[in-house]
Amino acid sequence: MIMNPGIVFSRVSFSYTKNQPVLKNLNFQIKRGDFLTITGRNGSGKSTLTYLLNGLIPHQIKGY
Image (cartoon, rainbow, N blue to C red; front, side, top):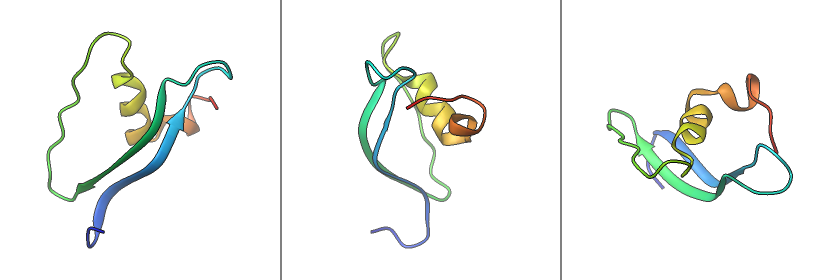
């Protein structure tokens, strides 16, 4: 475990509908001061991950 972690995701999943998860069982830690690059193909969940990181999900965008 990282001492004083900046962000910790442990078994995080998200779906916009009940049918199919966009992100499933994410596990990672980002230390304070680290930089993060999010890359991937279209439809891979980059925007959804960003919404989770900045708090739009679940405060502004609802899902399951």
